Each structure stands twice: as C-alpha cells, then as structure tokens.
Length: 410
Image 1 (cartoon, rainbow, N blue to C red):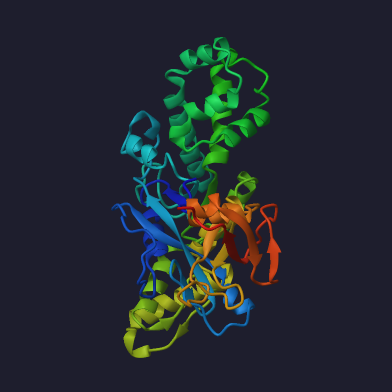
Image 2 (cartoon, helix red, strand yellow):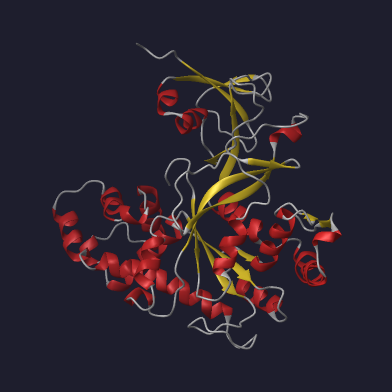
C-alpha cells in the first residue's frame, strides 16, 4: 500500500446502504481543522479508525492532535475511503457501471462489502419485501464479479506473458507476476503466498489451465484486497438470523453487523448538539432536548433499542477497525521529538498518530516520517520505557517513539 495512505473500498449492490455507510463513516461530529488529505475526489472521503489515545495510558491531561482527532481519550486516525458505483450481476462484462466500479477498487487495500442483511433488495438493487432475497448469495455474487473481472483483465494476454516467463530465463517468477499485476496493487509477497496456497509454484505458467489461473488470481486478491462483510440494516426484523448465516457461509471472512443509517443519524444529532455520541460508542446521551422534535426522539429510541443494545454499536467504526487493525494488521505509533515530555519541537503533546504494519521497525517508522530520516537513522528511544532501541526492535501498538538520526551532510 502507498506509504501512509490506507485506501478502504466500499463495495456492494445498489440500494443496500453502501452510500449511507460511506456518508456515516466520513461525517465527523467535531470540527477538524487540519484535514489529513488535501485533495479529495468526489467519491473519495476521509474515514477514521478508533483507538484509545496514548495520553490516557501515560496519565497526561490531554494531547494536541495534528494529523488526527481525539475525543474524550479516543484517538480517531484517518484513512481514505472510496465509495464506488453499485454492482449488478454481470458487472465484469460491463453491465451497469461495472467497469468503472471495478477500476475504482483496483488499488484498494481492503474492501468493505456492504450487504443487505434484511434481504430486502433484489439482485438489481430494487426494493423488495424483507426476507425475500438471500444476503449470502448477494455477497457471493459481489465477490464473484470482482474475481471474474480480475481474471478477464489478466487472461487477455496471459498466454503470451506465460510463454515469455517460461522461455526467457526469468529467475524471479513471483517478481515477474507481481510486476504484471502491479496495476491491481499486488506485491511480490502476495504472489508468493498465493503460489504456495494454490500449489502452482512448481508448474510452468504456460501449463496452467483457465481454472488454475482463476484460482490463483482469487488467492492473490484475497491477499491484496481482502474483504470484510458489513451486514447492514440489522435493525430490520429477520436480519439477525442472516448475520449468523453469513458468518457460517464465510468462516474465513469477518462479518460485522451494522446499521449505517443509525450511525449517520447519531453523528448528525451529535453535530447539532442534541446528543453526546462518540463514533463507535455503544450508547448516546441526550444533552439538549430542545434540539429534538418528537420524530427525532422516537428515531433515537429505536436506534437504542434495535441497534445499540443488541449489537453494542452501529457497526460502522467496528467495520473500519476490523478492516484496518485485524485484517490489514496495522498498529498505531506516536512519533515525538522530546521523549521525556512526549512532544514535538513545538511542544505539542502526541501530535501525530501513525498507522504502520505490525512487525515494523523504528527505521520503518523513520521512513514513514521522511525519507531522509530513514536514510540517516541511528537508533530510537522508546519514550514510555526511556530505553534505547535499534532497528531490530518490533514496534508495538501504542508505542511512543523518538527517532535519533545523524546530522544531514552539507
């Protein structure tokens, strides 16, 4: 993935609440002065994952966030989110806005597949009676369309590519395949793991059957753009049973129950000053009754009874956290310049919260901050323990790190 920029793709049929999910995830209930990404395309927004802020553990009265937001001790760290055109069956053949949809998710690091857990939209996305359609088959259809689109894109000139690799004395076959698939955000590691998983590593590429190529590309996609299923509309009767069925049908894929509409209404009510609600909380508190009419009060009570109480949240933040922390394996690290005061050069406490892959080293963090800092890296100081650590140290979630580098020459 591009350094510092995680891209989360929101995919699904039309009319399942996909765009509502996008709106809910990107609507912030507080004023954000420093937008983390300056240029945002119309279908790209900024969503936030949620972690307990390090200032709470350190016993500090507050922090001074610059690249993120802190609300009541919860740090919200930005990620890019793309909401793509809704899918219909046959999208990989160009039906609907299929080709545009699939091109838009080409570089997504993880996909949130929003399905209608109530079963109230047909395969074309038209409204239907709840329980009429199967969300399990809906999820399978979307995944099938994505994988078939990737296969058709690659299969067009695969034979020519495979012969060139097999007869051209290529020593790094995974590297060559990764270069061929680089437009899909695929790395050599993804390819090597997929070759091992499918048992195709010892076979010449030109001998692969169409089904073997399909299976290999599916294994690659599962690693380059893994999926989290968002079981939306859980407030509608009958959805709970479908959530169980989705979990049974996709045992290796996280399934997160959600109500995107509930999250959107809660965030807007919080922004209007009517309630206190921190995104991801299991409940809210009414703070100004005068800002709520009878319709709004009833809606909030329904949200509490049908969504928050049974599911312990709306699922929007939970889905993002699952995608970024559990599936992508990211952790949060706080770089500082003063290890004793936990501040930057301007005296701001824990200004930046950086998402970085689990297993990263302090040098990796230095490169994330600036290339020159990585190149001149000497060692780091763990500000929590005050210990000096080298580049063999594996960063841990919540670490506060001071990078020590050699003075720049010239």
